[in-house]
Image 1 (cartoon, rainbow, N blue to C red):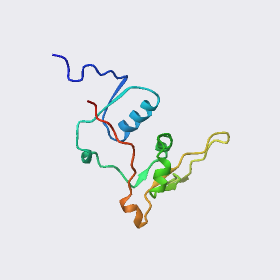
Image 2: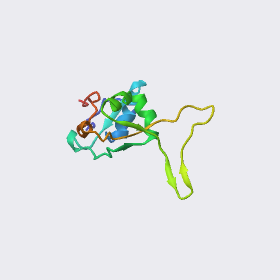
Image 3: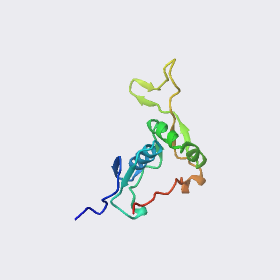
Image 4: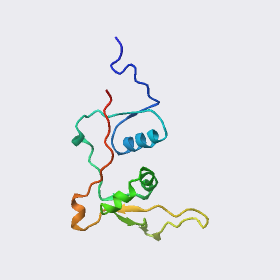
Length: 128
């Protein structure tokens, strides 16, 4: 007996359609890779609970490449710059003199309009 999905040909199969899996699938598909994105739960409301108060700066390049930065800022995300207090004083990252600008992190806008903030992306199509 042939597997249920016999006949489908993919370059990459990604297991997990949460934030990282979906981002990877989008970026690969934009480059022409045939991607199968699998999620064990069929209910879109069953996705994992996300930390919604902060997005770290290391996520910025991916968000930018996905085209989500304008939508984030329009939805009320506030740019911030990472810095940390230690017992020796402040650590404030600085870009290299000849390097690119450091990416931004985001925090939730404390204004009332941000309480129902969401970002809409293109729908995912189910495999036949």
